[in-house]
Length: 66
Image (cartoon, rainbow, N blue to C red; front, side, top):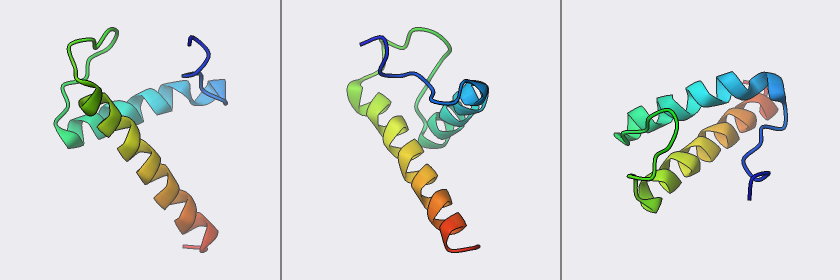
């Protein structure tokens, strides 16, 4: 499983980490650096799901020329 969470553009890793923590904060998920085994799969999944939702919305705006 070690290859599943890699960033496709290595230069974007820091920005993606900031984005993850921003989304977690918005959702009230107490995400911390490093191991987060104390969080439920629901909490972790909500962060990832919201990240995808926001990225898709941003891309749709770009495609629409806005």
